[in-house]
Amino acid sequence: MIYKFCSIFIFTLISFNSVFSVELPDFTVLAEEQGSKVVNISASKEVVSNYHNNPSMQDERMQEFFKRFGIPGMPPGSKGNQQPEKQSATGSGFIIDTNGYVITNAHVVAEADSVIVKLADKREFKAEIMGIDRRTDVALLKIKASNLPVVNFGDPEKVKVGQWVAAIGSPFGLENTMTVGVVSAKGRALPQENFVPFIQTDVAINPGNSGGPLFNTEGEVIGINSQIYSRTGGYMGLSFAIPIDVAINVAEQLKLNGKVIRGWLGIAIQEITKELSESFGLDDTKGALIANVEKGSPAEIGGLLLGDIILRFNKNEIVVSSDLPKYVGTTKPFAKVPVEVQRKGKKIVLNLAVGEMPTDEKVAKSNKNNPKLVNRIGLALKQLSSDDMKKTNGRNGLLVLSTQGESVAAGIRPGDVILALNNSAVKTIAIFNQELRRIPKGKTIALLVYREGDTLYVPIRIIE
Image (cartoon, rainbow, N blue to C red):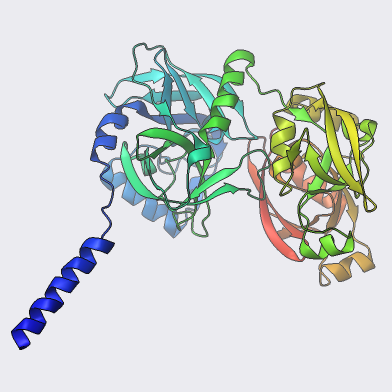
């Protein structure tokens, strides 16, 4: 009787396992076939720095790690005060054209004096930067080589949450490293990014993976690994990739024009919360609320007003506010499009002529023409009043009146309150702007911003 019961139990357990067992994907073929299409990128720049005078314990440990494993990319030992030295960084990329066109992240090569592309077969080539686009973080390189293996592109629209994906790159300079995981979310909007609906994954991405491809299980590239969320500087399970269709569109424009031409309205928008929806008498939280309209912009000329809620742009429904920049950006400048807005409870349609988004050079020139109003990073500021300080729980700061250039690209919005610059509390506009002027060109600063009851750090690179 006991034997019979055990036999039934074992048979039932085997049947249960056979029904519910899931076969994990085998990535060996993908690694073998796609590894040769991924490249290692070394970007170097000569700078004057006293970084090594007082290295932290963490820096010393990292130097020891790199020394033991013979990995390039870590700066050499101390050279003394203010001596020129060559700083280098490693990243990844992949080949999109047999004649030597390579895609990577803009932040990998943007400030570099020299860029070297190393193929999987160990050949090295000096690369020409065909163009970079900071707003999407995409760069296009060209090397003098031919008959190169190229990747195949997948369709990011067909990507599903939970789908297995793989990344190949050079984390910490360790070339052709594969990591795998699943898609965690789609269409993710990040605070400092307005033009990219990121693919979020839990694939292990670390410094050096930037610019490398994200593959589906068919061996097709569906994205470029670009960012991670981290409190330590290393992988914490949140990685973000630029959808490949966005990247290819940018790369094609960079190849033709050396820059990306985008549509532009000249407005600042914000998400519609449940509370805002109730206050505006809306049925839901769909749409983009206009928080600022730039003077003389296409939006002002076309009749958009502060407080308008954009529901549709050129027949595209705006479900969340982050949808709008994508549709506007991909619209050809000077095209006229219908824009449906809700104003004071009524829906109206305006025909707007879309403008061309100013380049960084135009914005910098505009800043110089308005030195009293706009500072080095494109912010017009106002000292907080006593009533304003109550909204920030008594903390002092500077109220953002308008944004241009780098501050727009970084995601700063009118109505934000700047609390600190590189962890130093701000005091007055004059002192804040004075500190900005002291920061070297090419360096990235961190602004502590108060926004709608929350604080967040926003990085901004000084380009002028």
